[in-house]
Length: 117
Image (cartoon, rainbow, N blue to C red):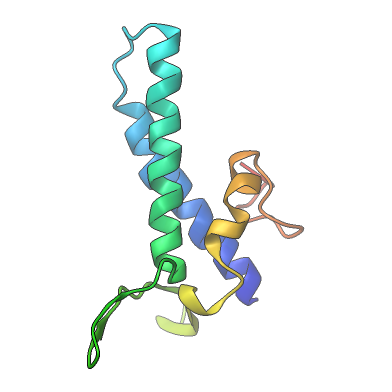
């Protein structure tokens, strides 16, 4: 279940963050500029996933540490309650799955009804 939820979180970030940014690219760009913009978007989303994974090290000094935390919840809509919640920094790492996700590989269990996006 935890791996599936990590894939679900990756799917959401790809669809919503990456998809939004790609949709904002000027359609008049030449193919070279478009490819550069798409690569920059992919690199930025990958960097975001690394931060969510807890890499690189959080901001810290001898006494304190400040780190971002992102969780994914599996919510039972009928009962209106969270059934499972995982801290994404505690798993196998979203950044590890990113390149597979770009190719549409979200694991053996489909993330959305009807199969892979």
